[in-house]
Image 1 (tube, rainbow, N blue to C red):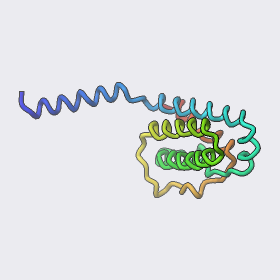
Image 2: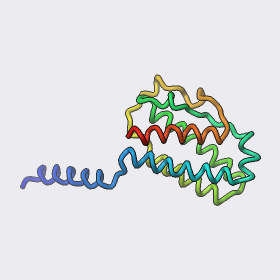
Image 3: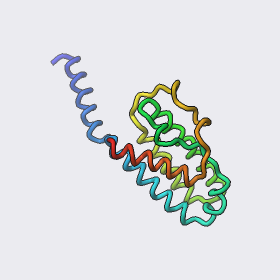
Image 4: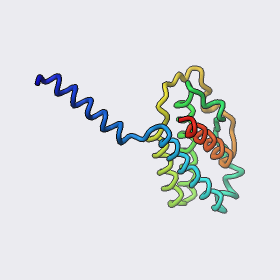
Length: 152
């Protein structure tokens, strides 16, 4: 057996193993959706979040129509950037438990981002998206994940 045959076989074998352990699109969206559900419940239960951030915190929020084939990755990245803003606010409030939970959610989002080709030239900049409350932000992102979960 020559060296190239072994090399090609090894690459093919490793790719098959990676495919086995890599979540498919449906699973990715389902995991993100689960995190969002938990985060939504936590924020509803928090008097601090309800009183302070429902009114004050404004986040750039994409709508389902913005999340089209060519802009999926870009819009997803915008959501990740806005989650970083929320994480910063949580950290400033001193709520370590919620900060850890939000860090976990953000890590999952970054690990399970859409695998779509992106042409950001025709996509809205994050700053061009509508500014909404934290609750509306979560609801909109939940709708996007739900739609993508059912499409996958």
